[in-house]
Length: 140
Ligand SMILES: [Zn+2]
Ligand SMILES: [Zn+2]
Image 1 (cartoon, protein in one colour):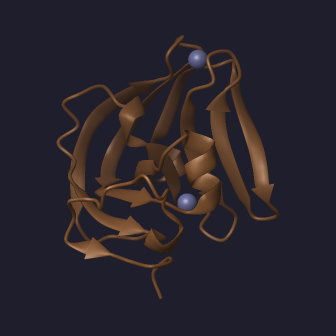
Image 2 (cartoon, helix red, strand yellow):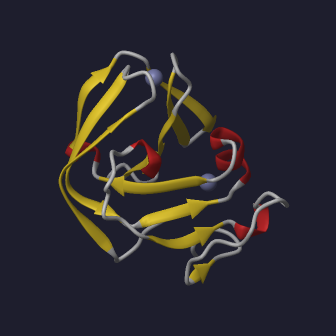
C-alpha cells in the first residue's frame, strides 16, 4: 500500500471516539488507500480507509487504551479497547510505515483517496470506490 502522492502534515491530530487514544502526526501523510481485504472489512465493519506515516512521526498524547490485535503472524490492527475505534494497521514487513485510519484524523485532512485495494474481497453490498485505480488484490 504505497503511493507516490503525499499530503503534507504540520501536525495532523487524531483520536478515537472516547479520547483514550490521541495522537499528532508530523511530516508526510500518504494519500488514502481503501483496503477491502477480508480482515480489514471485518475489523472496520466496511473497509479500511487509511493514510500512513512513519512510526517515529506519530506522537501519542494518550495511548492508555490502545490495543493491538494480531490477525496474522506479521500483521497487527490497533484499536481503542474502551470505545472500539479502528485506528491503525502495521506489518513487520514494513516497519517504516504505520497505516492510520483516515477517519480518526480531525478534518480537514487535505488528503485524497487514490486507490482501492483487494477489490476482489469487497462486500457485495459495496458500490465501487470513486478512485482512478482499482486493484483486485494488493499491489503487484
Ligand atoms: Zn476510545
Ligand atoms: Zn486490508
